[in-house]
Image (cartoon, rainbow, N blue to C red; front, side, top):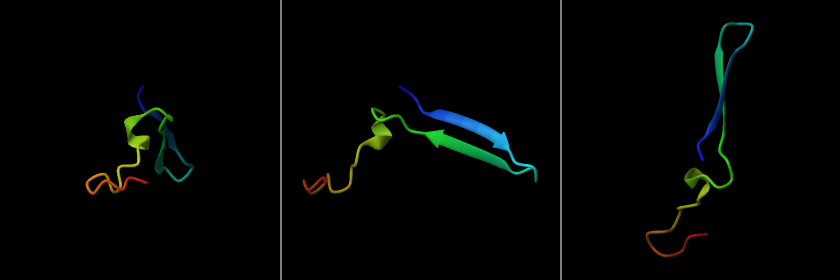
Length: 40
């Protein structure tokens, strides 16, 4: 499953990009501490 993106332009002409990461996506996995075995 991929990321969901929405690109919009505000009244000042600035492009805003919203990204939703689905719960099962690999980016949701907390990899902090995996090297030393203390993933939290």
